[in-house]
Amino acid sequence: MLKAEHTTPDYAAMLRVAIEEARAGLAEGGIPIGAAIFRADGSLVSRGHNRRVQQDDPSIHGETDAFRRAGRQKSYRDLIMVTTLAPCFYCSGLVRQFGFQTVVVGESRTFQGGIEELREQGINVIDLDSAECVEMLTGYISARPEVWNEDIDVAE
Ligand SMILES: [Zn+2]
Image (cartoon, rainbow, N blue to C red; front, side, top):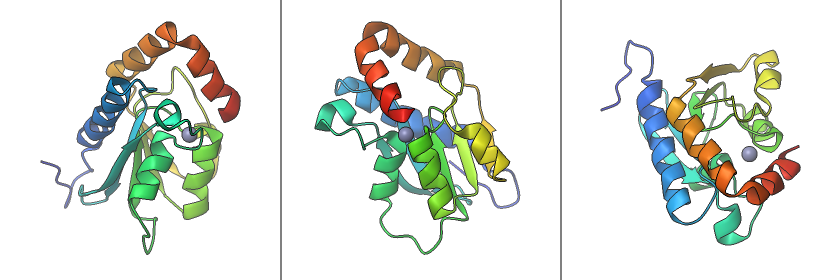
C-alpha cells in the first residue's frame, strides 16, 4: 500500500500504476505511455494512458487522459503527476497551467520533453530512471517507428 504521512511519498509505487496504464495501452495496440495523478498522501486520484492510436486523437496523451479523468479539482498544488515518460511540451504546459508542483517521471532517456523548463519554473521533477519504462517504450519505437515519429512531431 501507499503511505506517506511523515515519509517521502512512495514514488516507485505510484509509477507502478502509470506503468500498468502504459501496458494497458500497449495491449490495446497503442503507444505505451501511462500516467496517474496522486495526492501527497499516496491516494490515487485518477489514471490514464496515451490513446492516440486507439481513438485517433493526438490530444490524448497519458497525462491529459489522467488529467481529464480526475475531473475538477479545487487545487493541483498538492497533487502529483506521475508519468512513465518525461512530459512533452503540451503536457508540461498542462502541469504549469494548473499548478502541479511535483512531477514524477519514469524516464527521460528516450525523450526529455519539457522537464528542464519545468525545473527552471521551480517544479519538483523526480526522474526514477526506470529501466522497465525505457525498455517498454524503446521496444515499441523499434516496432512502430512511424507512430512514434508522428507523436514526437506533434510534441515538438
Ligand atoms: Zn504529452
